[in-house]
Image (cartoon, rainbow, N blue to C red; front, side):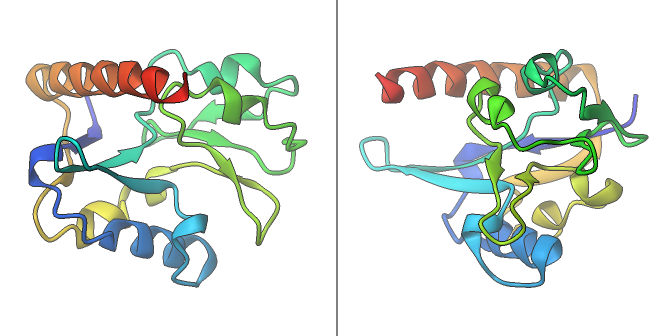
Amino acid sequence: MGKILTISPDKCTNCRSCELACSFNKIGEFNPRESAVNVLFYEEAAISVPIMCMQCEDPACAKVCPVGAFSRDKNGAVVSNPKKCIVCKLCVSACPMGNISVSAVTRKIVKCNLCGGDPYCAKVCPSGAIKYEEATTSNISKKKIIAEKFKDLFAEVQK
């Protein structure tokens, strides 16, 4: 089945180590704005949630891309080919998780690529809120439930 990133919001301490590790891996700088993971803090619920690409089975980003820049790599990550990408930002709008952006540094799409099969965010997460583990029926179901909950939450926030 392969490996997947799993998120346990109840374990997130809002340390934001995942954001820093991701940006450093991508551009060699500690700059959370260049990260493919964003930690959101919901004050009302007193909970922090690492938000990242869920590597959708049927990715909306790939569907809307007018130049076919998206594909799935050997690790199961949905990746954008910078040579094809015209940075039209349709994928940014289409992502139900709101986790694709454009880099201010590179002027390219910023999206999780699972760090080539060894995600830094999971390696540095001190609380185990982000894990990269073998896919099982159980954790795939949990991942889908969490994604749906946050998809609905984002829709509410954007209203």
